[in-house]
Image 1 (spheres, protein in one colour):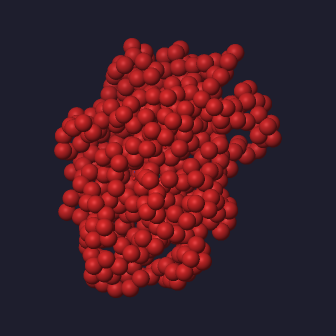
Image 2 (cartoon, protein in one colour):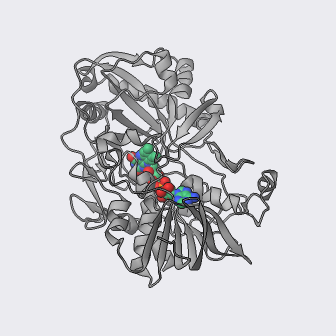
Image 3 (cartoon, protein in one colour):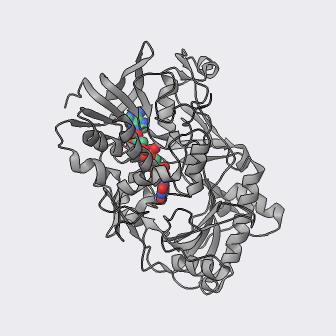
Length: 505
Ligand SMILES: Cc1cc2nc3c(=O)[nH]c(=O)nc-3n(C[C@H](O)[C@H](O)[C@H](O)COP(=O)(O)OP(=O)(O)OC[C@H]3O[C@@H](n4cnc5c(N)ncnc54)[C@H](O)[C@@H]3O)c2cc1C
């Protein structure tokens, strides 16, 4: 197929956000839509469709395999950052947890300048995307493109997390997508009858034969075409051949938190001094591009040898989740806990504590992070990524508290009956635990914030998601979150794209 040379809307990237946006633009406008996606179809990939196999996506051929680091807060370690390079993007490769976070996340965005993005204003867009198994309510949506189900018949280690949470004093959480989740309960997954659903399967795939839609796969977008302060299209490569497409109305970047800012920077939009240093002629000095990177550390992990042979893997290898506070005076739960049905530990933890095969992990995650990283171009056209996880002392305190609370959970009767012995961590004094968290921390694969929305000089897009200072160009993906949400980032990204389509219309 010869790629089209023009369209009303050009959408760059068919990931979690791009699939939503393309589908909704067909519904809310009369324009033609071309989607350019570097990857191909996930439909024949068992690692994408089968929830128990999602970890096989990490580092696979359909992964961009970026790296963070060396990381100053993590003993100088360098860590793989997985990103899906496939239709549906990271939403086709991720761990399927479907969770919105806390009301305070969105109210915080609005208070910080993202006018119109408070919880009550974004709630309709969360509801629109989902087909929740219990049906519609004031909080949940039914009949939307993404089927969402609660894990039932939990794996023993998932069930133990729920029971241990409750006996530790946490409320039982029947629905993790209430406005202010606190407690422990079964998770929601974007899956139906044990098969992944996503914005690819739910939003875009069903409309592929729409007469106003063209989806070009294997199309790597290389830069924006800028004329007199306006983005008029993009350049891209397919099978080594160079192409140009003109956007009659708008170009929307949905390439994710690494590639959306990367495309802006390589097109001359970003901090002018940095651009000159790597040999890119600045077109627009926009200091926030690539700054403000936020990532959740997951501590991998508190590892236990199981007392008896664990049963086969179930659900997304997790199945349940807890939301809790690192200290009694913390206003909004800033920690999550998942139990993982495999011994998911960092290489450094495995080196220090030989891990038996029949083992499982309890993994705290630090959610309301203060550390900030950044993305820069390198002189050879690559990217240099620093998450800077655990560089802010408050995040280290929260991480250590996460391990301590995790050990209390492991000491509850529900876990005690499953555990033969603790493998890691070893010593539990403060200094040892601080060393442990710096070696156990892994990225949750939730980068956000590199094209932050707002109104101050560090904002990259305004609250309508328009790139400040450029006509005809928006960003609509995880990169626009001004601050990271207090749980996994996929459902919030889908919400952003649902809302973007309305803003464009
Ligand atoms: C392994 C893994 C596990 C995760 N687990 C969870 C989870 O359980 N729950 C959760 O909520 N979140 C999870 N996340 C995070 C979540 O999936 C992401 O936050 C979300 O998918 C981001 O959506 P996005 O649209 O911003 O980017 P993506 O979904 O990554 O989409 C970007 C798309 O743009 C394409 N692209 C990039 N550059 C170009 C280019 N130059 N030209 C053309 N196309 C391009 C990419 O190939 C991709 O398809 C996980 C992520 C990973 C990787």
